[in-house]
Length: 271
Image (cartoon, rainbow, N blue to C red; front, side, top):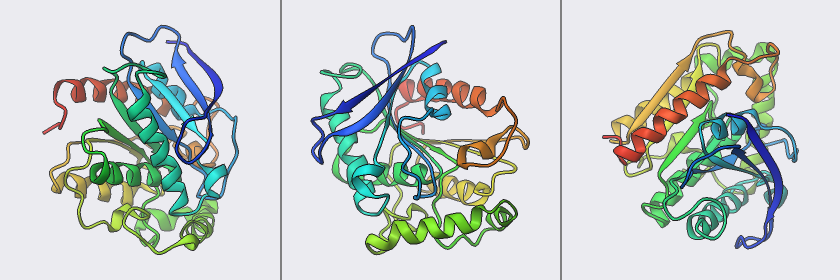
């Protein structure tokens, strides 16, 4: 499916106007799922109006994907980054019939790397404040652990990512304490959150914390679909690493998201 995109401003969000790039398949069906997509960048990048390969991959599965600029209003700091993202989520949940999708559209939140952290935080806050509004969360190599003590993340020193993530965590948490919404891996109560589709790769420095969070969600009774992609598929591209010109992971993300959509539609809790 070919994907089209357009830039727009969501001007009725409670925190103020938020810029977004909307991706959608050229022939998406009736009642398409809506995905709020939160970009990566180690809590340091605020680049807007750039291509988002993950968002395009989700759109190829038939979704309308709103890749929002949560950074400009928040400075990539907690709790503002979460507040902006949750405000957009609330807007999409309440206004989808008048804007993107329709009343039958499923609503998801997705994020990669730092955006995966914020997406997980949105899922936790949605459970606590807007029960049943979120149909699923898509966590793509999420940056969840400020202590960065896993074996896989220590390997990130070789490509300079551990230092970048250290700086990013310091910046993100400088606006407040380490609340469970800010570091979901530290949250002691995970039950009741939306079903999760989780991606990592064998050569991903965030592999261990991603797998660990998925295991804790499962233990809490949350429906989880977890995929570990083979090494060498260009996966580091999502957080700024080097890869080949044709990352093989995009097809996998699109295909597994399509299956996740079917699962959620038939079994809302994936239990």
